[in-house]
Amino acid sequence: MHNCILIPNSRITTPRLTLMLSKQTGRTMSILARTNPRLEMVSDWMNPILVKETRQALKSRQFVATFLLVLFACWVICLIGVAMLGSRIEYGAPSTGFLQGFFQVLSVAVIIAIPFSSYRSLLGEQDAQTYELLSITSLSPRQIVWGKLLNAVVQILVLYSAVAPFVAFTSLLQGFDLPRTLLVLLLLFGLSVFLCMATLMLSTVSRNRQVQVLSTLFVLGGLIAAYSMMSAGFTAIIQGFVDLDTDFYLGILTFVLIGLSYFVLFLQISISQLMFDAANKATGVRLVATCQFLLFWLLPSAYNWFYGVPLNKDLLETIAVYSLIHWGVFGFFVAMERDYLSRRVRRDLPRRGLIRLLAIPFLPGGTRGYLLVLLNLLTLLALLQFNAHVWAAHANSSFLQAFQAALAYTVIYLGLGCLLTRWLLRVSQEMQPLHGRTILIVLIALGTILPYFILWGLGHYDTYHHTYSLLQITNPFETMAEVELSGSESHAILSVLGLGVLTVVGLNFLPILRACGEILWPRRPSRSVSPDVTLSEA
Image (cartoon, rainbow, N blue to C red; front, top):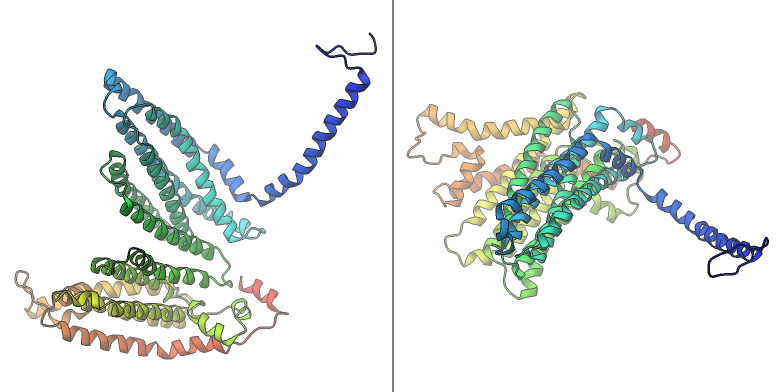
C-alpha cells in the first residue's frame, strides 16, 4: 500500500506513473521544441511598428472613447427601436431599419475617426521628432508604412467586432438580407482601408507646419464628404433600392480594381516620401501611374470583348476625361521636380542601352517627368483617334475638339511649370519645387480672371449678351466651352493652342535632350566610394 498511488478506477504503481509522466513531458517538450523556432520566426516576421502602434492605440483615450461610443450608440438604437416597435417587431421588415442605424454608427467610426487617427499618427512621429529614430533603425520605409496601415486595420476589425453582436441581433428579425449585409460590410471595410492609406500618404507629403494645418482641414473635410457620399450609396443597397444584378457586380468590380490601383499608388508615394533624398523616389510611383492609365483602357476593352459589344460613346468620353485629369494632377507634381540624379541612382542605372532608353521617363527629374506626361498624353490622343468612328455617327458631337483643347492646355501649363521650376531652382538654392507649383497656380488663376477685366476695360464685356473673344484664350474654361459649342472662333482657338503647344514643347526640347543624355551616357561613380557618398547625400 505504501508503494502505490491510488487513482480512481486504475492500479498504476509509482514507477509506471513516473515513466508515463516522463514520456508525456518529453512529448510536450518535443512539441514545444518544434514550435518555438516557428514562433520565433513569426515574431521576427511581424512588423514591430504594428506591435508598437497597436499597443499604444488600443490603450489610447481616443480609441477607447470611439469604441465605447460605438457600443453605446448601437445599444441606444437597439433599445429605442425595440421600445418603439413593441409587438410590431415580429412583423414587416424591422431588421432593415436596425441595420441601417448600426451601419451609420460604424461608418462614422471607420470612415472618419480611424483614417484621421492614421493621418495624425505619422504627423505625431514628425512633431515629436521620433521619426528620425525610426529612420536610423533597420526598418525600411515600406515596413513603417505597412505597420501604420496594419495598425489601422486592427482598429477597424476591433470596431467591427463591437458591432457584430448587434448585426447578429438584426439577423433574428424579419427582412434580414444576408448577401446585402455582407456586401455592404465588405465595401465599408475596403473603403476604410483605402481612406487610411490615402491619409497616410497625405501625412508623408505635408511636412511644413503651415501646410500641415491646411492639409488637416482638407483631410477632415474630405473624410466627412466621403462619409456623406458613401452613406447614401450604402443606404440604397441596404434598403433594396439597388438591384444586385450582373451589371451592378461588374460596376463594383471595376471600382474595386481602380481603388486597388490607387491604393498601390498611394502606398508607393508614401514609401518614396520616407526614403532618403539620395534614393530613387520616382521610378516606382511613375510605373504605377502608367499602369493605372493602361488599366483605365483595358477594363472597358475587356468588358466589350467579353460581351461582344462595341465601345459606348459615353463610356469612352468618361475614360478620356478621367485619364486627362489623372495625368494633369500627376504631371503637376512629377513635371516640377529637381533635375538631379544622385550618385546612388546613377550607380544603379541599367547596363544595357535599350533598357536605359526605356527607363528615361521613369527616372527622377522634373524634365523626365514632363517627358513621361507628354508620352502618355500622346498615347491618349492616339487611342481617341483610333476610336474616332464612335463620334463619327454623331454629327453634332464636338467632344474631340473640346478634348483636344483641354489636352493642349494641360501640355502648355505643365510645360510652363517645368520651365518655371527649373529656372527658379537654378536661380536660388532656397527655392523649392513647391514654389514653382504655387506660382503656376497663380498664373492659371490670373489667366482665368484677367481677360474679364481687360474686356470690361475695353467696353467689350456684356454680362447679358456675352460673346467669346480670343483675348480669353488664357481662360481654359471659357475656351473649352466655346469649342464644345462649335462657336465661330473654334478653328482659330485650336490653331492658337496648337501654336502654344509647339512653343512650350520647343522651349523644353533641349532640356529634354540633356535629361535623356544624362541617362544614356551617364557618368557612373565608382562603387568603392559609394557608401561614403551615399551617407553624405542622405
